[in-house]
Length: 233
Image 1 (cartoon, rainbow, N blue to C red):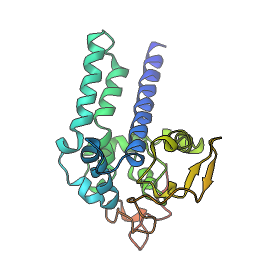
Image 2: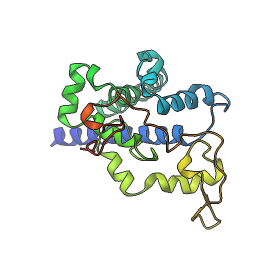
Image 3: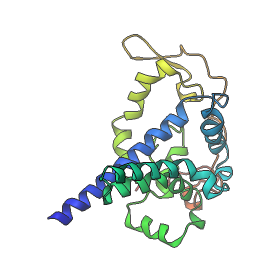
Image 4: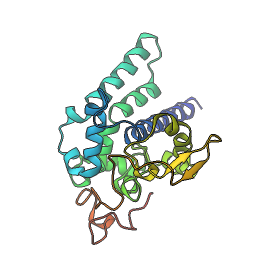
């Protein structure tokens, strides 16, 4: 029974870090400009480049892509150890957070991933390219979580991100989200179409997909965009 409980705690930790990865990803996609102090150059600019050209993202080295999340993972593990709380679930959470961006990157270069990544894909625990491809279709406003395939369907069905946008976007704005460019919220919190001005910068809906060559051929149609076969597991 203790083994079952421990396995359950590990799975909860994995789902928790996936949820956190989605919140960070959504915030990166939604808030700030490339000129925003500190985060503009560090977070916003690389995120904009990634959505325009996925190959620019995947060609960055491991340290350049993961140093910040790696540091956060070390901090979580260190604090847990300091307070005597470092166990397997906490280690899974810290490690999953440290490698969240690397897992994201592997989904863009499936032909170049190590064997152990393919093995994890085969178990169904680690998110695969077919699942992540959904984030890069349409308005690019779904499937924000990047670690597992389990959390995204729940959050998207509950319209969790739309709820966050209803609460936070009227306060902080969303200058790079074209899907929110024609939407504002009245005092009751309800969305009103066609009142907000278009953002000065953003990801054009009509622009070509930023992912030609980044996903397997069977996940793309003849135009180079992810095709209808790119479905979630």
